[in-house]
Image 1 (cartoon, helix red, strand yellow):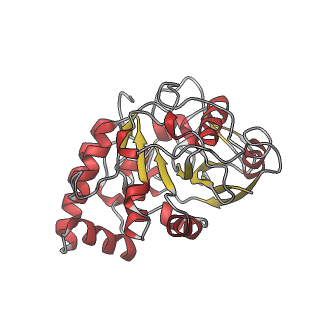
Image 2 (cartoon, one colour):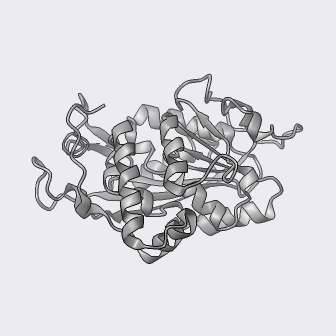
Length: 301
């Protein structure tokens, strides 16, 4: 954990109308000021667990999954495919998977995982829910621990056995070849190039071979793959190495050819300039530094 994380900053609080309506519906708190106090109190607890920049800038209010280009495709799978499992990896407080359920994805087909189980507990506090009122199973674990998530080759033929009952799972490995949708945002950029490939292969092993099954997300990127020295400043992690980011083309090449057999998936990417107000006042960061968000989906053909 960073020894001196950047202090929380109330001026970074921002919530648009869609997110405000969602949070009101989830929490039952109608007054915007009372809702803000509630959100900021939980934010402080989450930041104490691990000071991720996404927590500091309230990105859990951005409803990121619901704004990805492939989101409607995700919702269609939930409605049209029987028992289509949705897995959120690196779920934090579960805000995105809750939005998918709110928008109609069958709650009984959802499952979430994160290395910090305390975040999931805080999710119940943030959204004023219980395991009974929001019965999505949560599986704590390290995505690089093979006892939790093993790297196996993708499945290319239909399985002959049914998917396991989600509520009985203690790891993600029994889901190999069973998952229709995997969402992972603000996740891959935490790791170096080798580990990004490893976790991509682990995800691929979970994905159902049925056409239309998909993995989607968004995270930090660059126009061409490479390293960002600024990451030492913005993350304040005391890293011995800079952060690695993929570009749109290298991301496509990784999934289509290195992770899956070439030609068996469609990879769609978009790179957007990402305004980062939370970085604007950080010492050591050059004025005018540009940050990018890589938005993507991988769909089986």
